[in-house]
Image (cartoon, rainbow, N blue to C red; front, side):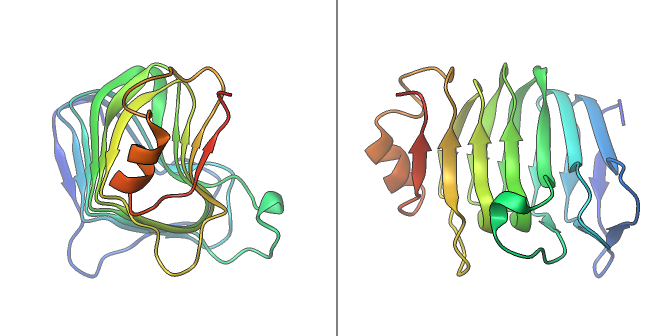
Length: 182
């Protein structure tokens, strides 16, 4: 997708990934991906949605992987959403459910936006922040714990929106945060 479009799943529909490909690559402005339900028949090492451009939205989707055996450190690196490095500004990710994946989102360097009111559980890392700037608020973590809810990697800017860490935790339902900048 490279045009302004709303891609909306019909009630009861499912996108089932059966090969190691990225099923949705959306690069452009004002793209909305909503009400999609996505999974795979096996764990594939890629994301379900790769998104770049500006002013895009990922809303009210359910993305999950098939079960993988513990420990999580051995899980295939599958992810729900990955913004393209240095090519995503003002991304809104809201009202989604991501679970049974290695990570919910990997936030690449040079990307920014808002991650609001999502539910992420049964992942090694819910949101992985790699030199990206995303405001996170109202996210919650389901009944099956993540290994860590929010991981902030070395090189990510110090200060808002991640600091103070106590506020980030409080704004996201007592998130477990791994701050690797220190």
